[in-house]
Image: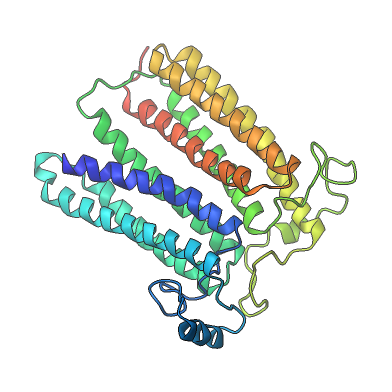
Length: 335
């Protein structure tokens, strides 16, 4: 079935796109192309000598670095491919709605991908401002979340709903909200270049668990006026402020990690079906893996592979929580 295959294609593109976006950001290639949607006015990274000279003249503060430019453009190409697949899903869904094909979710995905495109443009034109980059990260997770829900809808169509105790619904929703809050803190930590602000574990720095001079006001400041800085690459905050952001993210990891592990064990023990056991233990396993990756990132000084895996792990953890919500809300309450 074409609709199902396109949905799977969209899902696979999202699974590649989100870790790739993290890889681009962590490689400091987010401004590898200082304009949008092209790269120095070209559909690809300029390579001919006269094109490179013209690009360097047009952007003297951002001379051509081909290795960074291609990372950014490959990310944009995949995002464009995703947009085309989603448009196809919308067309097929609207045409086949009388035959039962879903069309509301594809329409929501189309609106979402337009918003993501706008945030991608603002990420470049507003010089990787932390607020915009964090919003772009969350938007990417929202995109794969919608795609995953569409895939679950297609996969489970015609199957008996997975029965769930009534209490699972609010617990699944609460767990998702906790997770989204922690992912937001993680994105804020990364986009403010605070991931290595606390180089020790379990301490932050100088043998202390918490920053010596925490600055909560600046750490939570969302907006920095355009023009105040040439760009936001490598961060604009001082060390105490970055340490504050990092420490709050760590505290969030302790709280949210504990909540998710407890929920996973509860779902596995009380679900009454082997699929609930699988979902519950998947939640526990992914949460533990995320904690290990976070600790490893600090211990090893944020190696690229570990940091990218930590971003991908957050994405997969969200998909597990969405699966739990899907089944908890779809399944008929069981006495």
